[in-house]
Length: 365
Image (cartoon, rainbow, N blue to C red):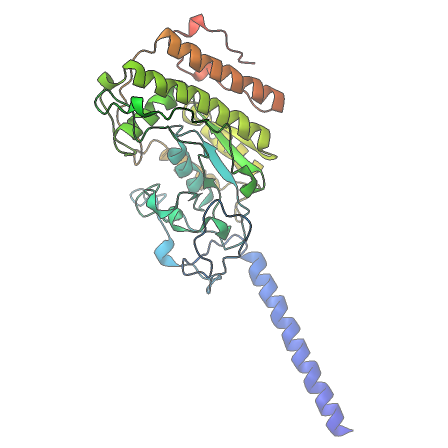
């Protein structure tokens, strides 16, 4: 009996130790739920963004420790902000959300704001070949299936039928493929389970921003001469932007089941803090230490919102022809109608530079 009693006590002691250990581990995970941790040496391999059939978990061998090589200090030069970091969230802790926009809509700048106020990297569907948001940023390096980023950049459009901007010098406007039927609208919303943030910018501004990008060999801060913005090649390009900008927006407005729309002009010109707070509420983010948003992080984000890491110091433009403007105004009205039907906020056309806006009749309410 003594032997049995001793075994019984030993067994109870082991079980109690295991229960206490599990309780402490649970408490550790609970109070560290906001800890941002990741390690690029994870067991998941880089997957094609189009392969959604075999969803894999990205398990890091050191999920409870911050990899200091992946930590970025975005405001090193500011004494009152230099301690803030941007890092990865823990693997499998953040569902995949798309941050989608037509190229030239200010998505890289917007990513800086979102990372600043959350402290979590944004990712990109385009992988590590894309330049970092700012120097020292690692968000583009991670597998998009890790579920460790706050949002994932994804333009989800079919690019122009020409290799680069069709200036008069390269004469690529003649290479548009005859009989090619352009895809209409998005194709990848389903890989985010229809969760998305749609970033919209005045297409008359996005048109020139994207043109400078294409014409400077995809340099995010490059520019081309405005003398190239003429002729049938430029006409083809304006048609492409007007149609694709509207198709992309309308398609995502229809497909998004959980998300909202964000306007570049409101972020830039109006209440940036209110727009960011609205965005974070939609995606279910709350700062674990200062819910819902850390006021000091927000202050530092706004203090540095005009940084020029990936912005052009100048952007040459030209006056648009009546035909160009008519095409673009029709695209704006299409998107406005789609937003109204969805019950979402409408395009802030009062903030748009529409070039001779007095002649237009675009709904603003």
